[in-house]
Image (cartoon, rainbow, N blue to C red; front, side, top):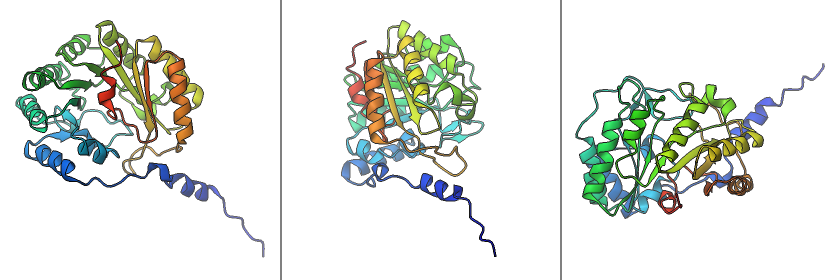
Length: 297
């Protein structure tokens, strides 16, 4: 009887899915972590740390820092990498800016990162709530520095300028991936439009930042091209980290990038004109964010 050789694809796949040991992190514990969790829960706040299943939550919360998500926790976009719920968001809460500001003051946060879901259904894309949140945080905690990780405003540049004029030190907008993968990864976004948003933010005099996930099937040349495009459009700070699949419904991990490759990308980014590159498997766009405040404009 002839033996049938089984295809090896399933084995490859099994190996692919197995997380390498450099991606293992400790479970969040400790007094500081518990304190942040309590304040977040009591103030009915949303954090991208929780919504995005961030692997660094224990480290950051343990150090008393967190990334707050404003404008609710339901997004109008359906990016294939993201763990945040998609749907029709409820009416937004006009008291949210004050609650966020009070929580940040209670937590005595030195550096606050604010982000939001996309609110494409709002005429101003949520710009006024963005502005009010930054202003109120600065009023209650004048010494707290702020990074705002803002969504794609779909070329509504008036909304962009309102979002970035509250007095924040860093304005971030994540490219997320290389140009070829946009359709699959960010179906409602456009690569050129996100570049233009970075360019206009820089021209408005801001410290600019962006993030790219790796391991989605991009090539080294494509990552280098994205670096060149970002540098040409005025980007100061770039973060590079490993994409991790939040659930089976999300886009699969194509490859786990070795820490040495992350190091090589960091060197390459600096060579190509970026002022600061944070690059490593567990890097997320808010990781070590407090260090990015001091990057010269």
